Length: 126
Image (cartoon, rainbow, N blue to C red):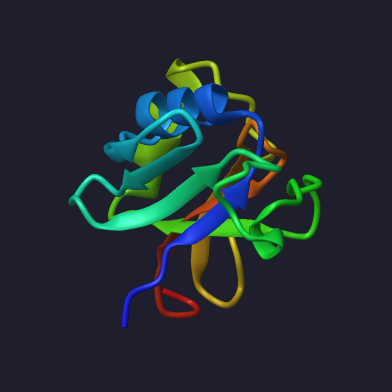
């Protein structure tokens, strides 16, 4: 089983720019109302769909309201990734920190208001 998150938004161009330029995602498929992106390894992980598009059923019509969702991206070297994000002048929403349960992470926000937790998992106390 594979899963990719789908966001219904009018911000297709902004989303494409953010995920491809900031996070190095790739474009797997794109048309005038839909965008499918892959992680840097080529796995489809997130898609964007224009709201109220006539090709879609009612379940996939209403736009995301920018609240109540987050994504977690696990990276091998969170410190290096943090520096890269800073160099790109992306606003940091939660500064790089270590948690008692083992996460070393920081957070940014995409153009749709989705929090993105960039994390490297370690054993607690490591």
